[in-house]
Length: 265
Image (cartoon, rainbow, N blue to C red; front, side):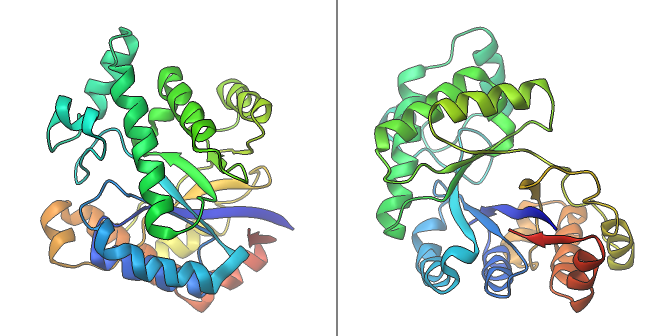
């Protein structure tokens, strides 16, 4: 059977999302959850995730989603706050500065260190994996900061890295870099189909995992609508979250995995 890492990377973005992710983890319907420690909700939501992590043990991966850009996250380090105050830059702004080699390296290094420290302090454990929000690990300068921050953290066991690249030249290159540092890089697979129709999603999932390499990371965004989510996200995205929550929580989902000869790692 093929092993697939089905994971969500936005824990602490909204209470409805967080409740959903914890439930799916406990029921074995997700195999990985990345925590947004730069979210304002993290200080309130870490405790129930800590309890879930203790219950699932080695059956699931609990990691960090490093955020250097985007909405609903705030700088954790003092250096980053000095530059951007209480709001992270946009992905476009980070990419433009990275391309021109104008990225404030010291601030980004400090931010990576601070977010890793915040995870281990609150969770009282090391991260099983590390991802970077909005695909910014594609940028070599960001990748360098992330790998260096992991090395500075001195973890007893090297975390896995979620690749932003689908299998190919760039993905192999990142995997080689990770291997030299003793870190396994999980290849990126196609995210769960974005549809608000549960029957449509069930149908598409029958062949969604075909041809994927072993241990591929498949991203999903299940969640239950709440006031915060309705305020912060378009109605269409909230409907997609609700659809994924319903499908992943159904008995049919396990039957689909069995028919596809797939199990969640």
